[in-house]
Length: 198
Image (cartoon, rainbow, N blue to C red; front, side):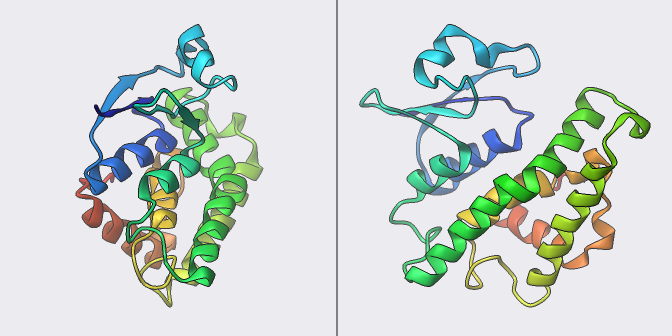
């Protein structure tokens, strides 16, 4: 039996789970959950994930798992997406933690408010643009010297950070300012078999 992924197709956090499953050949059933309509707060989702968030994955044995980065690491266990070397594995987690704390809260939030809620720039917190560009600048500095985020090879860190970076133009971020990041997005898109987002 396949795993069941409860997710919203507009969410980078949900898509990274889908991409990881597809890359690794993990069979899955996708259940669309419209976050904008509040469907993540349904009783069915709350029964699996009391935080009422997607993505949430239900496994064959009835256990559920939430939080996108935790899910992709679980799916990738034993694969090349997780470095065997302890330092590089820790470096992967460093990027995964950073993505949720210092990247997603600015780039993804600005994208959602601008692209899906239709807010003009004048109504957006200017810190979202400033801190989002700061996150992209940090990635640029790293990717100028390496084709991927961890030990020169595709890992869960790349899949996680590509999810919203590749859609950042929808939040008003210009990847032309970050050529190494732009090249990296194209590289990860090719690895995952994705059509370019922009």
